[in-house]
Amino acid sequence: MFVQPRRIRRRAALTLVFVSVLATGAAVGSWGAEPGPRRDAEAGRIPAGAYVGGVESDQVKAAAAAAQEDGKSASKAAREVVSRSGDRWGAVYSAREYEGFRQNLDGVYVGVGISAHRDAHGRIAVERVEPGSPAQKAGIRAGDRLRTIDGDSVTGRPVTEVVALLRGPADGSPGTRVELGLRRGGHEWEQTLRRARLSTDPVTVDRLGDQEGDRPGTVLIKVDSFTKGSGERIRRAVRSAPRGDGILLDLRGNSGGLVSEAVTAASSFLDGGLVATYDVRGTQRVLNARPGGDTDRPLVVLVDGGTMSAAELLTGALQDRGRAVVVGSRTFGKGSVQMPSELPDGSVAELTVGHYRTPAGRNVDGAGIDPDLTVGDDDGPSEEARARTVLSGLGGGS
Image (tube, rainbow, N blue to C red; front, side, top):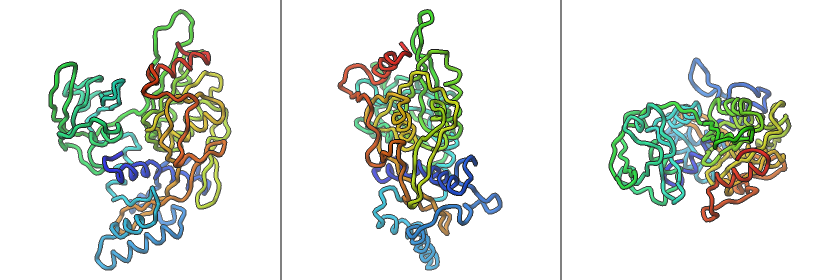
């Protein structure tokens, strides 16, 4: 989720770096190991042979090695090979970029502590401010409008780009400055913040609306990304929801993350069975939910064009198996598997080796997931309001 189109593709590809590692683990029978790349504790490097190899990765490694022997940049040579390959999601990352993304999947990032969204008028607004963050200390509040970032207008920019600008470069360090132009009511002002290393919980849980007597309510579970521990957080939220309450699972703007966490989330609503299938260089594999999920509670999933990768896998599983009604707009369409390989200079090359499919066999990549009920900007009530109406019709919520 960076500003330039190429960088947007690179970030989206990064969301499945650890997905592909997980796929490799499943293929060699190590499912259940901690997700993410296994690293040699002694050398601090990705172990040789940890990933499924192939002609393409061999070519990239050979080009990188040859360049390094000639005193040239190994990563630059690798990027040239990847660029010529025609792989839409292929990319090469510096060791620092790769490590930064790994930390992000652990729920840590460098930023100012602002979550942004597009409000009912199409403007970029502050959705949430992390407690103790630079934004919170500066007095920025939810509902404030973002006008500019470092002097550039955010009007018309996708929310993902705005968030990327707030966080800065992938390899940015705490302490870098960012200037925000804000508006609250009729008051406009400029605010300079310094980015900090922050920890965040990507899952927020709220009970919506005033309830009357024993009438069922709505539990809103908003999932921003599938970082480490998010799947279990969703399971706990479902288990602790009052009896009879419906669940509104909000996956809008969810850029993906660890597929293992998405499978755990699916296990909250399914009694075992298929979540997705995937292939790695032609070898077919399956991802199954754990038994014992809540299969009775009404469930609506809310999605949009920013719902990606692991979030799409979860959406497709719940939709195909008749467990949820999906409301919103078509999802992004990122369902490919990348395998990372470490290059001689410590950078990481990533190439597509397969694709994910929903339980019904639908290919997500390039197609996305179509909702059962499409809700656009011109359809009157907000997406969330429409989703709550649907949930009420299923027997849960208000």
